[in-house]
Image 1 (cartoon, rainbow, N blue to C red):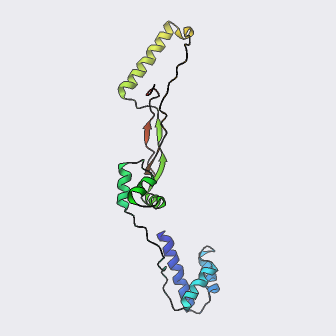
Image 2 (cartoon, one colour; image 1 turned 90 degrees about the vertical axis):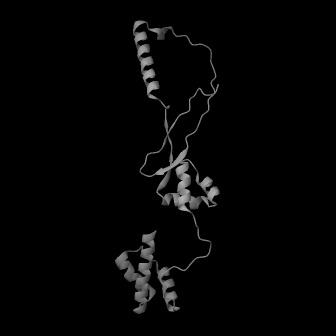
Length: 190
């Protein structure tokens, strides 16, 4: 945005130069497009600035606009996100009395983006991992000696109710990977 502001002011200074040289808006725009290309300014923008110069106003700055300027404490927003990476723009807006779009713009300005958390199967400790390997080895050895899978008979059905937790979004830097969250155990509730 800073670069765009400098370009606008640069073009306005050039328009003021051509105005003082006695050129009209169309001629000034032609000179601008010869150097900067068609995207520099429109004929209408040049005409508006020349009308402003003719009225005696040679200020090339933007006039102040109506409406209350948005004042947001970036440190407060960053502190809320650091405390809870899964906080939403709505929650931040309610706590700081800001609009969602203002919060979103400030988060983007801080280099944060909303990413979907990545599921990992379960949180496995070293002990649990070793136990799983031991059980798998013992089942394979058992199957070699006595092939028990041919003798399996299915029983009646059993209903298992579980809490299906959905993935959530969290704020993280663009170059950081998304946070990992372990899946809930499917046998929590019965």
